[in-house]
Length: 74
Image (cartoon, rainbow, N blue to C red):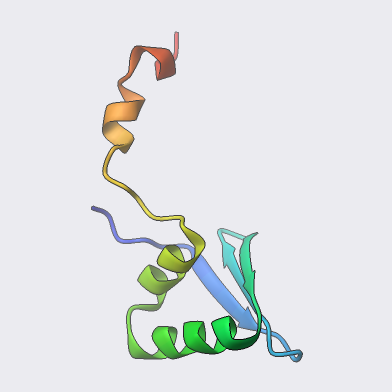
């Protein structure tokens, strides 16, 4: 599975955290969830944590779905 990349997070003055992926907003966390997220980012791989919190990580079935006849390009 390829490592996630392209994520950034910005802590705002009001205490919320904005997570972006390749320049587009992927999620906003506030309150206790923001604090828990920041603790996880500090303790582990930031890209993987952000991918997991936003739900933007690979599930392992992308190749199978790409090869399905319905998804093939003419």
